[in-house]
Structures are given as structure tokens and as C-alpha cells.
Length: 66
Length: 276
Image 1 (cartoon, each protein chain N blue to C red):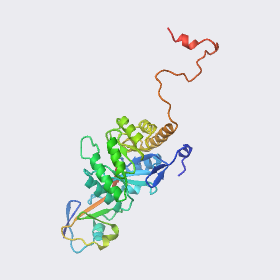
Image 2: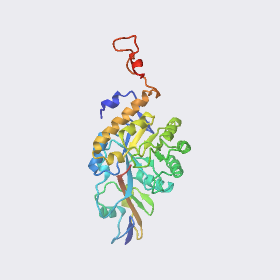
Image 3: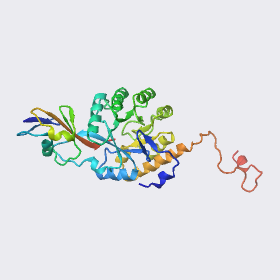
């Protein structure tokens, strides 16, 4: 399955929830905010959200800023 | 946290939307050399409002999150930097809210890469929609009175006029226009951008600004924690100057000590001596 995460193509085998995917790609980041196909998915819904072929996933977090 | 200097100032708290603050200094967290410096500057500045930005993570590289270095007690104000129009600013604001870290948003819409001036029209559009959605909206703006009035009308909690070009350390280049906004606004005015030294922060506070936001001047100083403390003191000094209703400037000299002669009281010694 091919998905696009932050503009980069990533390949995964087998069915995955958004939560599974986040555990794989950024296990240490505790302050993630996610969008799937331009819709915000709250962390409470990560487990219920299944990733599908071609999904565009945005993972953002807080950085320093003025 | 007890702060003797704060408690000595006969001042009302800084009321911003639903919260009130003792500190009138907001601190940005960009451009610091290390995240430990961010934390040290926050502590030294005694700030209660800290700005952060949102960015895509680099999934191939783990970086420690800035939030790990910001005390939980401070109010997080997420900016919409990177937004080129109202639509992008709104998207960023909604993402920030989805993080669960509150709904305080500093609208920053910039589509000029040379001068980085904020686009007031797009800022007004974004402010309207986000205020309707219940965000506490603090728009960063070019100091234009009509735009400021419009921002109040559409629900801004405060306005944040720029002192000078962002990151320039040039101080209050837009001073006269900021003065007009301070005089005309019933909502708080926070001077943002360009404040490069504690004396400039004090000057803005003496003019009647409600608060100051600094970032570059602290982040790029050799000793961020020291300058952060200096800014804290300057903001308090400027505020106290404002509250004391500074006397007017006078063109001529006006002696502070009695002008009579030292020993011969009835001779106008100084007056005569000064005429050659």
C-alpha cells in the first residue's frame, strides 16, 4: 500500500490504522497533529481510522516560532 | 511564582480575553540556539504567554519537541506563520486546536518574502472566521488604524501592530502609527516585531502599549536568559512610567535644584555667570 506522508511516498504492507502507522514512523513524538486527505483526525480517533491506498497524510507538530 | 517587582507595581492585571496575567511580556521561541536556552529565557523573562509555530515533522529524523521545554503553566499562543492567505491561516489554527493545547492563535499572514509584512486584509478575513469558531484571536498587523478597527469589529481579542520589520531589531519605526492605534483602541495593543532592545520595549510601554512580544532580540543574544530578564524589567519600568503619567517635554532647561546662589542667596549668581 502506497501512502503519501508529508509529501513523501511511503510503502506499507498489510492493513493499518492511523495509530499503527504513527507508531512506526514517529514513535517518539508525543505532540502530533494529523490530517488525512486534508481532514483533521483527532488523536482519539487514530485507532478507528484505517489507512487506505493513496491517502495523503500530514503530520505536524509544534516548533519554535515568534 | 512570587515576583516582588510585579507586586510593587500599582497596576491592574493584564486582561487578555478570558485570562489575566501579571507579566506584560510575551516571548517567542524561534531562532534559539538550543531548546535549553528557550527554557532558560522563559524562566528569566517571567513571561506567561509563549508563542510557537506549527510545521510538518521530518519523519526521517527525530527531534525533541519544543513543548518539552515550555512549562505547562504558561499559555501557549500558536502562530500561523507560513500562511500566505486567510485560508491557510485558518487551517493552521484548526490544526493547533486539534492538538489539545488550547485555542489561542496569533494570526500571521505573510505573502511578501522580502519585507515579510503582514497582509491586513487576509488577516481580517481569518480573524473573523476564527473568532466565530471561538478562538482567542490575536492578529499580527501592519499598524493601520482602519484595519485595527476592522479587527476589533470582527472579534479580535487584541491587536499586535509591528514596531518595525520582523526580526530586524530596528525598534519602533512605526511609532507614530502605533500611538494612534493605542489611543483609539479599546482592546489591548501588543507591540510585536522589531523590538530589538530593552530600551525599545520600555519606550513602547511608556507610550501606553499593553504588552510587548519579543523573540529575535532574546533568541539571538549571546546570553538569552540575561536579556530576557532585562526585557522583563524594561517592560515593567515602561509600564510604571506610563502609569505615572510622564510629564511633558520642555524646550528650555528647568533646574532640578534651587537656582539661588550657594552662599549669597539674594544674588542671582547662576543667571549672571551664564551671560558672557
